[in-house]
Image (cartoon, rainbow over all chains, first blue to last red):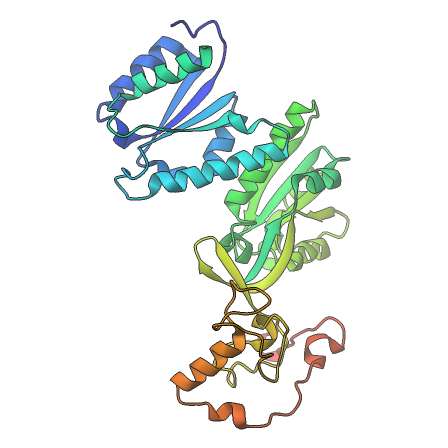
Length: 130
Length: 222
């Protein structure tokens, strides 16, 4: 999959609990895609604030993803539920200025799916292309 | 606490339309607690305004600042060094804060980003409820710390309307009947006798009878 020609910049905020080896795995895809992708590991997706999403968009990302643990599987019980509410708020804010709410997207990983962060990211990119 | 909500961005944009250099000023007190006008909300609104301007090809410059309080001169004074560099100030304070800044800088256009709503309490995370009208003649001591003027949908001062159903208000079933609360709590503390006493009429002039109110304390003045 060649993303280099698309020129799309994505910000990917994700829960660090998803992938114990996230540091090495995300760096691999960052090396491959360069400035077109930036990862922001969070201790829990519940740590996300709408301000992070807005700043990511304002800093040049065309699309901002927030990847969380499956519902009911948050290590901190309801972090991913909070993340869902916060992304909804951020979407409403950008809608007010005429931007597409789809620029913020919540990716809930599915239960039993133990993909690494780079694999999850490649799935997202493949879906974008299709 | 004074509560407020952000105005629609469309309305804010209309106020800012003629200007390029905008100072967005938050307040770190009440409106920060109710997630309307603190540092975070200044950031969110400023980000949105910058992205909106960029999308419409308009050049604007925004500086973000948040004062600990926008209603006290000592804090407002922090704007003195920067305010001249901006065409307009967008204040995320309550109405009192907006007016206080305008009093200090009468030659600068100050506009509100919030609609100030009520005096209230943080009931739970993300929920604020009105419970005080600031009437200036508090009777909470008689009513078991439940204000019937504020919390009764009909503002009844002299007893329940009789329309409540299973202790809920007939106007809004999400809200408990204030008079039910008053009676229950007075029963709990063994002071129902407080309701048997006849009180003189409330002095409403302390709320709205003589124009804007003020409190003057000589011992606090310099």
